[in-house]
Amino acid sequence: MTTTTASLDTLRGAVRGTVVTPGDPSYDVSRRVYNALHDRRPAVVVHAVDAGDVIAAVLHAREHGLPLAVRGGAHSVAGFGTVDDGLVVDLSRMRGVRVDPEARTARAEGGATWGDFNHATHAFGLATTGGVVSTTGVGGLTLGGGMGHLARRCGLSCDNLVAADVVTAEGTLLACDAERNADLFWALRGGGGNFGVATSLAYRLHPVDVVFGGITCYPLDGDVARAWQAMVTAAPVELNSILVIALGPEEPFLPERWHGRPICAAFTCFSGPAADDEKVLALLDGLGPVVGRFMDRMPYPVINTLFDEQLPPGLHHYWKGNFSRELSEGAVATHMAFGETMPSMESDTAVFPIDGACHEVGPEDTAFAYRDAVFSHSFGGTWTDPADSEHNIAWTRAYDEALRPHTQEGGYVNFMDTDDQDRVRVNYRQNYDRLRAVKRRYDPDNTFRLNQNIAP
Image (cartoon, rainbow, N blue to C red; front, side, top):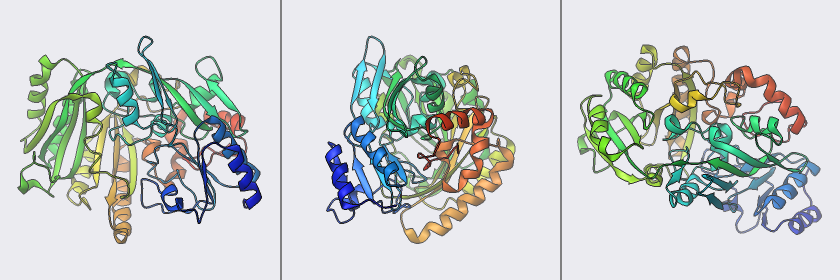
């Protein structure tokens, strides 16, 4: 079906935000998403300003048979925030964050980014687990699980979600938490965008103010990865470190002879006392020969901005992801081999630790099923020239095929691409059947299918 001029007029009359269609001056800007690999042309983009606008957009899409995409921070690597010939609900004008410092909670609107969230909560010396790039959307990251610098100490983003408001496929706004619509609340915590549009999300906060963080660089060497695994799994939960494999960045802290050469790096955030900073440096020094370093005391929000300039909107991305209980010899060898052939300066591998507080939540307490995993592997090509797409995608697929024997069957849904639908069941493991039941209750017609889709 299509949407008519008359029906568009009705939609415009029903929303306070902006309705953009092809031919409008702002159309090309409105249809743009973070990942330039997805250059799609929606029939309608609704820039919602409140839940009422979201309801009107969802009902319009259903009435006119339009595929429905939901966009928060627009960072979906698989491009789920846009769709050809469909309707996009864009939440980017809904970015308010309200903090209750006494209760140590914060409620964010569905279009807020982690930069918005961290700015608001830091004023009170509080934070919760978010991503590692400040322009990432709060909603999309949380609904998929949510890893970040505070995960070992505070748990995943979804573990800190205490309530949400959700517009369902029927156009109903539901409040959900541990008591109200508890089955929906359970599914939201790791089940992705399958169940509706989260117009607001409330989080538990933790005392986090200034951290000791930054990046320490080493030659590309399997011994560095092995030492990093030993360090991070034995460290106190206040110490989070992400193993990065990349080409040396052109930054002042790294000598020029390492620019563009394969390296290992420890992207570290220590939220413990400043008196222990030297101990952290000693641990990092023990991983291998340090060839460059930027580490300093900084406000917590700053550490989430350190890679913003290297990863601006408009690059092309194609990623994969896997979980593992350990960084095995086979995994180390695979990461080293593909690190040697990293296809661009923007590409990287990141191994996130997800132990500590992440293991204090049971495997069936939330939809995030891999509570026995210790690491989450993210890897893929990122490039600037569309002509390089075929090479980068082929490299990433070969990497994925080589790593699979050395990792668990499933992976993190936010690192999956559009060709990973066959992995949805194993990504949700023992929770898949329960998620399907929730899907059948709240979205039996699969209105929300542009995601790592759980079919009803």
